Length: 277
Image 1 (cartoon, rainbow, N blue to C red):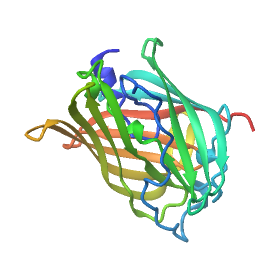
Image 2: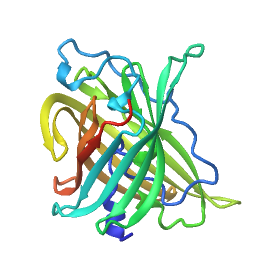
Image 3: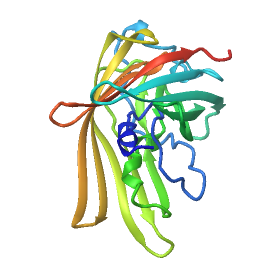
Image 4: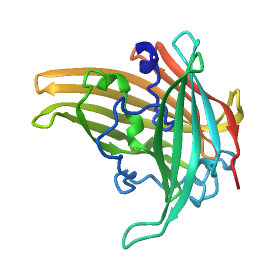
């Protein structure tokens, strides 16, 4: 895959499932830790019903088995860069245990194609829904380009998922993060970190994309990407990200910009199939 396309696939994006480690860890990634996300404020009484889903988490983001979401990725000139397809493989309900609330877990298969419809990669991600809030897989915060120079190394992932409440109260949302410890069999080599902060939510507002018109909440965030080889050798990049999400659909549109406000890339929903009910 061209280097510029790998860079453009960094999305929030976090929620779309459009990114993953360029090399998998030695063992399969662990399930999303539903206890690692900060609690979300109680819903505001004035939250718009048109932008929310029922308060239970039976079907996070309105997902059902075989639901399929297709996203168009574009560059800073709004030229097509690729297609991402997310398909729900399974949805399972996990009962409450001791002090842990019950939750629903969604396994998604992710397929990435370049602009010439050539398969680039396949990945799996998990969403979890509890207490009326969807938690997206923290591994989605990784920029694959940050690991490109560490081929044939071991990666240990420490993710903190992002929270997307069905009926946000407005104001701020908890952040998220991903730390990747890069090592060889005998020594730690570097840490690669993504930190999401300053998440501000507003709305709802209407957003129109090729897949239709949706009532969405707008979430503005600050993304910081850090590669630290040693205490005095740190490489840092800052991006501003805006996500538009509809609780009954998921992420509808994402915009990533440089600190000066220049558009870096976008992703928007171009097709959604309902799945098997």
